Amino acid sequence: MNYFLKANIKFITYSLILLLVIPFFGINFFISFLGNVLLLFLLIPLLLLLLVFLGFNSYKSKINTCSNCGAIYFGLNKTCMNCGLDLEDISKNDQLGNKPSESTIEVNAEEIK
Image (cartoon, rainbow, N blue to C red; front, side):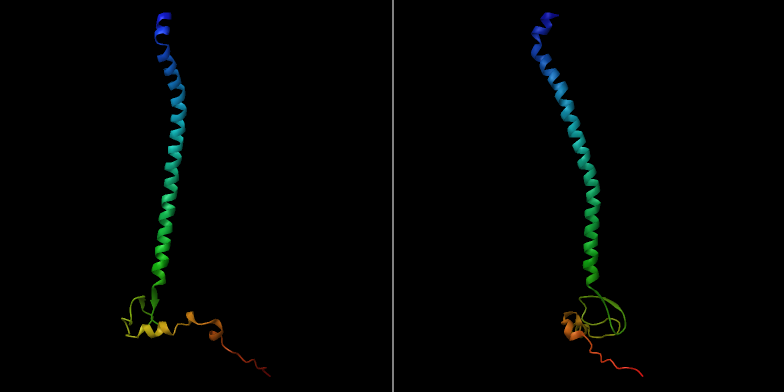
């Protein structure tokens, strides 16, 4: 028995070190791996929802309605496909680009008797 211990002391030492070190780092690796996988499962749907939200808002900003007939058209059309109204004139008359002072209406108050 002593001969076996003397002959294989390095083997036993390295075996004990591996039996103590590998489970610690293995469990640590496994826990971090599970944490990263769960994080990906939570973040990927949030990222997809954000992309859908941004795409929807971009698409919604380009949809307009005709002021004459109420038809819905995509922002690249020059004339309404339903009534033929020139849509470029409407976009030029849009008051979103005007200053607020140009858009206000002057009201004169009168006393009612």
